[in-house]
Structures are given as structure tokens and as C-alpha cells.
Length: 108
Length: 108
DNA sequence: AAAGCATATCGTAATATTGCAATATTATAA
DNA sequence: TTATAATATTGCAATATTACGATATGCTTT
Image (spheres, rainbow over the protein chains, first blue to last red):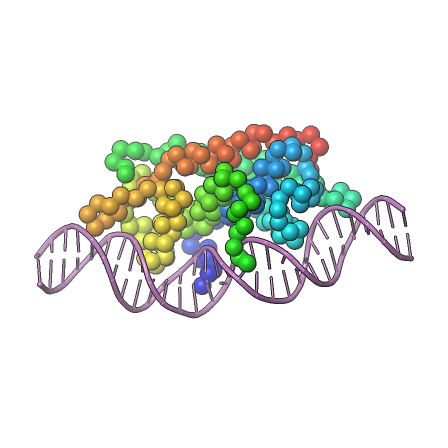
């Protein structure tokens, strides 16, 4: 085991899970926060800001990219990373929709 | 290793990561979708709807509860689960804020 | 009390994730 | 061309997650 049984769930459910999972690590949240603050697509200045080894950061960046949370473009020997707005919008809408559709009535 | 180095990150970053991680499994997304659809706090009718064994579902429910995504109240020999709106609001706002603060200019 | 439900917990096997050193790769600079 | 800088990949150890059978716990009904 250890393997997720994906076959039973809808496309949408799997999509959300994959994206949420990618945000499910503080280092990756920190990277997003940093990209947002710097307000530009930085390469691995990330290394200087986040106290993890270079291979580890590279791995986290890959996870974020695979989940479409960030984009990266090669620029010489540097990579410009930036936030992929639309995926965050998707998340925001998905969660916002849940929040606003909860009915209280006989709830806990 | 395998252990996340949490000590370097902010409270907020860790909080978001924990919540996002809890949403990072399709079964848990499916449970939330179900709770929303049923529009009431059901006990383990979840079992009938989600094709996983009872202990597995119970475990997923615990993860969701620990992340404050759902609440559960005991009612006789049943548990009423329901969505914890405020945590979803928190997520929606956090991600929405990111989406709306991205600056494009020289981005990828 | 006994039987029967709904849930939780335990133990365990299979697999995934995290983190990093070492090493590769690729682009620029000297 | 050689060195240097930025990034990716590989390999591996430690730990976490997922899934479930078996079993426990705790109501509720008979």
C-alpha cells in the first residue's frame, strides 16, 4: 500500500488533490510567498532565502511546476520562476465555493 | 529523512501547508464534496459512497478533522460530520490573495 | 445481559516523500 | 578552452502516508 487509489475518484477531485498536495509543504508555501513578495520571477535567489539544500529546493520547485502552481522559463543559465495565477484562482474558487455553500441548520 | 523541516518556516506557512496537505488526497476531496452535496452532517453513509474500507475512511476523516476542515459531533453511536466553513474561507482567501497580487510585467 | 450497529484504533505491508551529498548538465565568463 | 555559476538528476537513508484486516470501544436495541 502507500499508493493512493485514484481510480475511484473524479477528474476534478484528483485535480484539486494534486494541486493541494503540492501546497502541502511549508517550504513550498514559503517559495510561493517569496515569489509573490519579490513580485518578479526570480531564479534561485530562492536558495538564499530558504534554508534547504539546493537539490531539495530544486525538487520542491519541480513539484510546484508539475502542479501548475508556478511557471519557469529558462533564461541563459538561470531560470525565471513565477506564480501561475490561474491555478491559484482555481483553488480560490473551489474553496470559496465550498465555504459559501455550506448550510448550517442542523450542523455540529 | 522523510521528515519535513518545519522549524524554518512561519506559523502561517505551516498552517496553510497542513490544511492544504489534508486536501491533498482525492478521497478526502471526495468526502468534502459529499458532505457539501448532502448538505447535512452525515455519519458513515460516507462508507457507502466512497469505495474504501472503513478503517481507511475513518483515518481520512481524522486527517480532515485534525486540519479543522470538518467538525464531528457524536450523536448516539453515530458521528455527524460537517464542513467547517471558516477553514475553507481561510483557504479561499489565502489563494485568492495570491492570485490577485501577481504582477505580470516581465513574467514568464 | 446479549447481540448488533457505528466508529476508532492497532498492527503491518507497500509505497511515497523529504532531504541531501555527489554528480551531471548547460550556459556564460575569463 | 577552461573555469565558474545555476540548475537538474541520481542514489540513498530516514520517515510518512495509504490501505486494510483484526480487533477494540461504545451506543442501542432486544
